[in-house]
Length: 158
Image 1 (cartoon, rainbow, N blue to C red):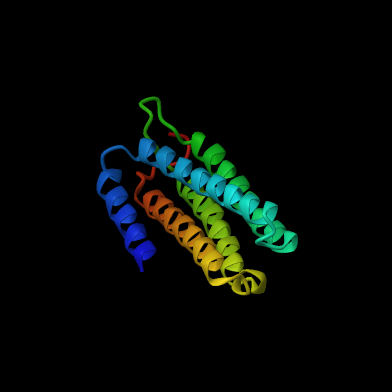
Image 2 (cartoon, one colour):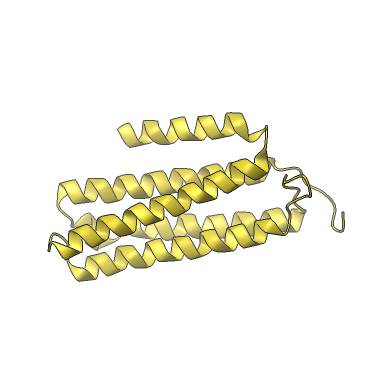
C-alpha cells in the first residue's frame, strides 16, 4: 500500500510540474527510470551473491531490468529529435506515437516480470521488494506516458 501511495505522490507531483517545463520533466523522469533499474540491479546482485536468490531468478530479473533500460535509452534518443532550441519538447503525431510505443513495450516487459513464476515463488520479503521496484518503475513509466500525451504537437517539418 505504501508503494502505491508513493507512486501516486510521484505521479501527482510530476503532473503538476509537467506543465511548466516538459523537456526538463521528461529528462528527470527518464533519469528516475534509470535509477530504479540501477537499484534493482544492486538488489538482485546482493540477493544472488549471498545465495538468497537463485541465479536463474536473478538472471530473469536482470534481463528484464536491462531490457527496460535499453528501451529507456531508445526513448531518450528518440525524444532528442524533438527537442526545440529552448529545450522544450514539441512532438509530431508520429513522434508521440513512437514514444508511446516504447513506453508500452517497457510496461509490457515489467508486467511479465511481475507475473513471472520465479518472482512469485520468492520468499515474501524478497517478493515484496521486487514488486515494490516494479510498481515504482511502472508508475514512473506511466508518468512518462502521461507527460508525452501532454507535450505540444506540431506538424511535420516545423
